[in-house]
Each structure stands twice: as structure tokens, then as C-alpha cells.
Image 1: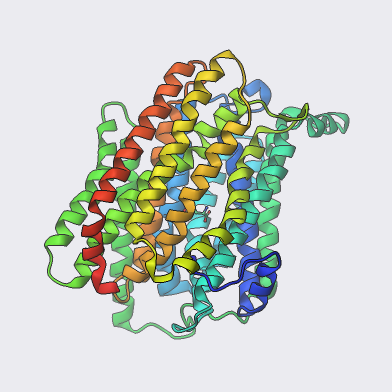
Image 2: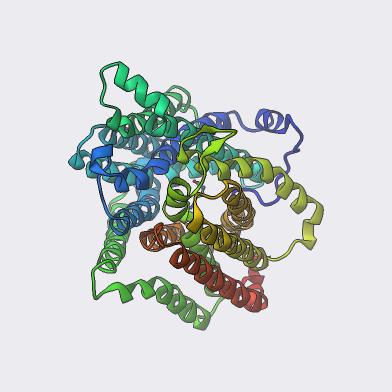
Length: 505
Ligand code: GLN
């Protein structure tokens, strides 16, 4: 969905000109999503650091393993709830109302985190996860609804929308990191009679303000937007029965996946994590045996699903392993002036903003000589593997003191190039391969790959051992090796995936 072949021109003023050439509603959705992602990434930049910070420093004093578990389950829930969230909007609420309700829940969730207590911490995470499940798939659907089927501006529109996501993701850690971590703000708190160890909660509150801005923009400007469902039509008895049946299946499936994820954290049951891989493999094996093109395309989707899941499992460690590496083992100053470690989280979105036009130009130039999606994914995995390979010497050097921030800049550069070969390409390919009338479901599956990947990122981040650089270097090396292996398998499978997807060409 997000562009892989945008028609927008990319010089300095391209995005303004691009936005002007787009349906009027796009700017409303662009700014709403910008501020929603500001709140999500602003909070996420602090989450792990806040959980592992000592109680005396205002943190929760959790072990790294505990923090990794909570991070994994929380970020998994955020993406997994997109499936029921999309369904509720399609069948009952309509996307606009789903965005309004979801956005309000997200804002309340951030304000709950702003309140310094353990109970409000958990309530806040639950509210944000539920709210994002309603918000994220449906704001995306509203973008899609701006275009007729044949409108060639669709890909460019999604490209602009993805930029909005990353502008929010770039600004947020700068603001929340300054409030939560900087000595300047802490001493301001102290001199104004506030407790400086509570600075974390000022950061979470800023995320809440971001989400509030999103809702104000959306409330004031979304009235005329085309919706995905006409909620003024009453459902027939039969229709209502279908909705209830579908809803029950989705709720049960989601609960089963949650149960699997929680159980896989329990000692003696961690082998269940293999099911994250075994289930999609079984799905592919089943689909290829079925007759008809749709089943073959679903098998192709399954292969890309596994690749995406592996990608996100490493990439989303930006919020765990890499956040801790930045905080504990990286020099956090420019020309002698210290900056908050959360600022490292802004590097990936900056690279997305800088590199998207280049990738767009590349796809435009290659046109129909473009590599197949499976090949793009495999190259994305190679770049991801290289990013962790780069961390092997960085971790080794960390044995003798904090390392240069340039290591992390290199890591994020490689990872962002990989992201642009997987995330937008994946969205666009999913909508192309989805059998008729299943686009919403297939997009839900796509977000499920993010959900499983985030869960695994929590598990892998929970093993972070800042005090033992050689164990850490080994961990980076192992992961780089496994990802390279996955890339090799995907290269080998690419001709087969192409055959499975041929009916969509
Ligand atoms: N960074 C993108 C976003 O926030 C994609 C994240 C994902 O799918 N894991 O929308």
C-alpha cells in the first residue's frame, strides 16, 4: 500500500507539491497519523529505559529480562489487535468512528503512564494497545478510501503518509528524551519544586499531548472524509449473524495467540516460541496443496510473512537491545555536549525521510525491470544482517569503555535501507496478492508479522548483557548469521514464490 512506485516527484518541494496534488483529506490523515506516531514512538523511546531504571531514579527497577517480556507482549498486542480493530470498523463502527474512539483511548493511556504508579503503568499500556488496534489499521483504511480503484495517485499518497509517520517518529524521542533524561529539564523540575526523578512521567505526558493534538486535528477536519463503511445502513438479521460469527472467530483466534505468547514466557514452555515459525510454515504447506490461484497466492504471502517476521524481530530491538546499548555503552555527546540516549531513536526516521525519495526514484527508473518482492525482501534481510554484524566490533570495543555514536548511525543506516525494501514493498505486495475481498484480512496478517516480530524482539532484548561485552558480541553475531541464513533460503525460494504469485501479475 505504501508506495513502491510513487508517482510523486522528489525534489526539495516535492512533498508540498505532492500533498497539494492529492485529495484534500490526505493532509488531515497525514497530520493525525504524524501526531499519533509521535505519541507511540515518544513513549516507546522511554519504555525499556524507564522499566530498567532503578526505583531511586524514578524507574520501575525491573530486570532486563522482565522489561523485555513486557515490551514484547505490549508491542505484540499493539499490532495484533489491528485484526479485531479492522474487523470492528469494517462491520460495525466505520473507520472514522474507530479512529476517534481508538485515538481517545490512546491519549488516556499516555496520561495514565504520566501518573507515577505501577498500576497506572499497566492500565496505560493496555489502553494504548487497545486504542492502537482500533486506530492504526483504520487510519490506513481511510487513506485508501480517498482513492477510486483506478486513481494513480494512491501509491504516492501512501508514500507521503509514510513520511508523516516518520516525521512524528523523528520529533518524538527528541521531545520525550529531553523531558525524561536531560539534566537541564531535571534541574528545572528541581528548582520549581517538582521531583526530578519523576521526569519520565513528563515524557509520557508529552506523548499524551501529541495524541491529543492528533485528536483535535481529526475532530475538526475529518467530517467530510469518505468512510470505509456506511454506518447509517441497518444490518439485516442475516448480516448481523455473519458479523457475530466472524467476530467470535477473530476474538477466539486473537485470544489463542495471546495465550500462546504468554505461555511461551513461562519456564519450561519457552519451546512454544518455535510455533511462531511452525504455524506459518504449516499454513504454507497447507495452502500449496489446495487447488486454485488464491491458495497459491496465500502460500506466497506466507513465505513473505515469515521473512517480515524475522526482519521485525531484529529491527524492533531498536526499542530494547539497541536502546540499552545506546544508553549504557555509547558516548552520548556531540562536541562535548551531552544529549539524551533516547535521541538515538530519531536516527531511523530521519533516514526514512532522506532515503524514501531515493528508493522511489530507483523503482521509477527500473519500472518493469524491478526485482520481485521476494528478492527485495532477501536483500532487506542481508542489510539487516549486516547491521548486526557491524555491532560485533562495536560490542567488543565496548569492553574498554563507551563507543562512538557512529556505530549506531551505521546500524540504523543499514536497517533503514532494509526497512524500505520490506515495509512499504510488503504493504503494496500484500494488497496485490490478497484474494478478492480479503485485503483487510491480509493486511491484518501483515501486521501480525509485526506483532510476532515485536514479541521476539522483546525476548531477544531480554537477553541483553551490557556487563558482558563478549556475550553481547556473540549474540549480535548469532543473530546476524541466522538472518543471513534466512536471506539465503529466501533467495533460493524466490523463483518458487514468483510462480505461486504469478496469477496476480
Ligand atoms: N514504522 C512503521 C510504522 O510505525 C512500521 C512499523 C511496523 O510495521 N512494524 O507504521
